Amino acid sequence: MSKDQAIGGIIFIVCVVLIIGYVLGMFFYPNIKDALGWTSPAYETVKYWLVAIPVLIAFVAVLGIGAWIGWTMATTPPPKPIEEIEAEEKKEEKEKAAEEEEEKKK
Image 1: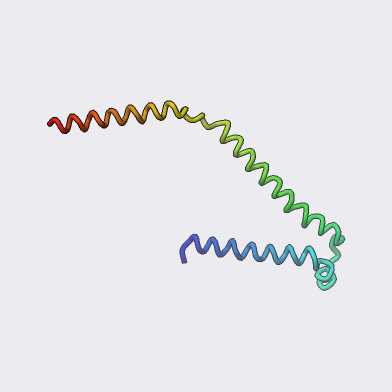
Image 2: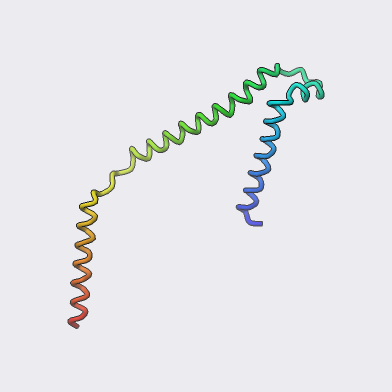
């Protein structure tokens, strides 16, 4: 197994554990709390945070990606106009043709 496959396997296992924990917390929290004898926060409070935290993470991630795109656009110089690129290509073609003619003369 390669290093990438091992990392992929770890990511998979962590995600599956988080999915199971999320579903258990979202739908079976009262049963788990009673079974374990916890005196923890109310079910509504736990449900609120189980929704609020992923929403916050997603919101921050989307804004972070937007900020990165904006930064990239702001700091990247504009490309050359197409006319300049075409002129350079024509010049290179002419130079190449001239070199070929010189080689033929030799």
